[in-house]
Length: 259
Image (tube, rainbow, N blue to C red):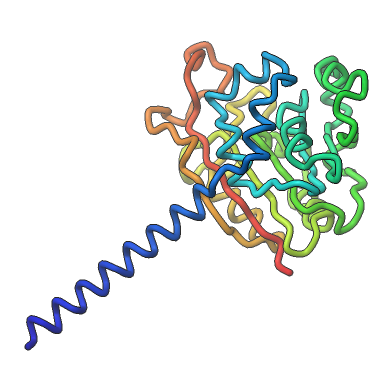
């Protein structure tokens, strides 16, 4: 009798574990919609963009972020707008994308890439937003979500008040809206030390990012292991010569602003 009870308990525990694992996997890897597939596979995308798909896995990541038609998205420190274009294609004519860039970055490194991407009104729903991290002047509760792809670490050399930057994002996202962060992993326990210098490693500690976002009021909703690389020692900048042809270890997180 005791054996049967133990067997039932073990079976029940195993089932619960399996269900929990299945739930976590479903949350981590949602299905890729036909809209996302069409956006990524569009022949209108620049070939230089498409060449980065294998490493960035945009179909799976856009699904993980939760980008859908009609959304208003804030693409933080968009650079040349690689992700902003995909977000705009998925959001469609009823959506909107703010492609934010710090003017000091554009002045130093040229804004040629974003100019070329938006030339000829080829992405009419993308709004160029040249505003510094410390004064983004974003409309309140306007966005369904925000994306920081490979750039959250940059906040720490672009601003001396990253908590203030994150507060701006919190205020700009609607209640129930999301913030997706993908970034190059630094060794555990290093906080922002690998991110403070423009000439540094350009990496950040995943646990530290979670702390910063929680402090602002965001709730961690999902994590993805899709861009992980266990062979990366997490110490070299992604642009180091020895990293050529290799992928860094990246974490991917989705946070939610409480309703």
